[in-house]
Image 1 (cartoon, one colour):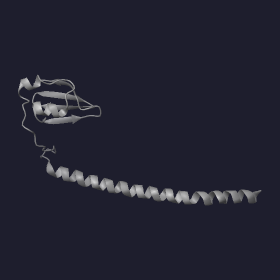
Image 2 (cartoon, rainbow, N blue to C red):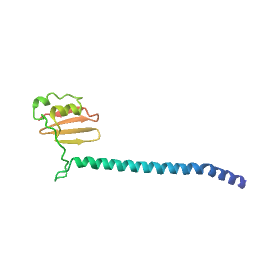
Image 3 (spheres, rainbow, N blue to C red):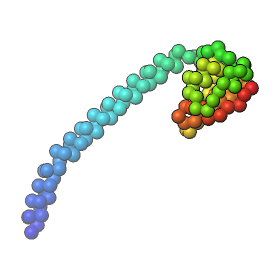
Image 4 (cartoon, one colour):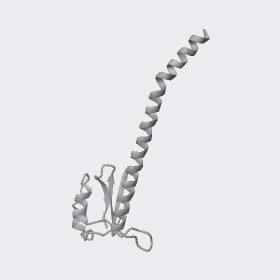
Length: 127
């Protein structure tokens, strides 16, 4: 009886061992691939950060497109559901953007525009 149990156990080990070794090789290859991807992303982020140096206060110096956020007529053209690009064409680039998990808020001098998680205007406060 013990002999049969031993034979069965050894047979199972012989059948499973190559699959375990292959699984480990695949996992190692996936880890190497992920490490390579992370290194590429770190390089890309560093390249982008080099384009926008930080100010003395640690904030990014991102060039702001001249816009018309001071013109109340442009604010009055805002509509719910507008895209971020449409808002930027009307008001120019925001001075500051606060992004959260389900919405974002763009700050202009004296006014703000709120976007939902899909990047569409959800509301605003005129200057």
